[in-house]
Image 1 (cartoon, rainbow, N blue to C red):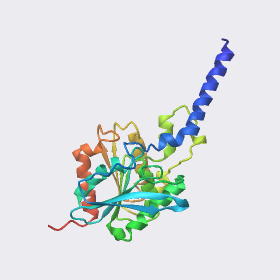
Image 2: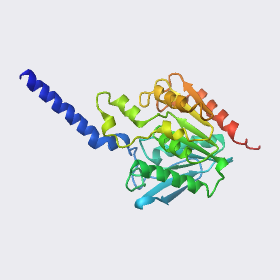
Image 3: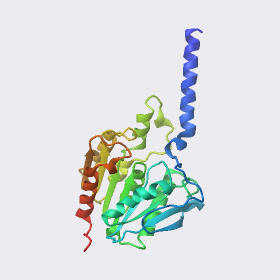
Length: 274
């Protein structure tokens, strides 16, 4: 094989890889797995209510509302990109230990949520969940909580509403930065369909914000959470918890994380009376 033929073959392979990323980017970004099937129940230790919200363009949003034994408000929780409420329900339920009800919904294409999915539609569904909570809680009783992909929903929503507080766990500044980290030699900026500009959206927020990130995160690098913090720290009251050695999915195993979240919530919400 001549040098020119080798170059042609390599170029063809490179173009095929680019085409793969272009066609299958949604499957890489949204991974609604996790053992869910229509008959599998959501199992929690707390009382909870299942409900379905009607979204735009005929979409339906499956959600659960977990009740704390004593509540001083509600955490609106947006989960990561892998798994449905069957997986995330028990994870979100842990937050009831801080004295909050928790409301979380599946994105379209996850679990029982269905309908056309675009960045704008995801944002519309996010606002739908928030408006639903406003029928049950005052705005000053609501905390937004975004984990990984969920940080995109929270940053957008925080820039357009005024909850009492915002918590971002393993967030990123923009989806382009995450994509470039995982695909260093692919020109993702030319075909990425989801921008998720958290850095821009969070600048419009007015609520106190807490960012938590581990230094050994290999999914969303620590530096991207730090860049998000640095982009807004002079505009809003924003704190950052750095967890040395923390990875993408294990921050809840670190006492410094629990202590930081508890302190932040106690600072901005009334304590429960004994």
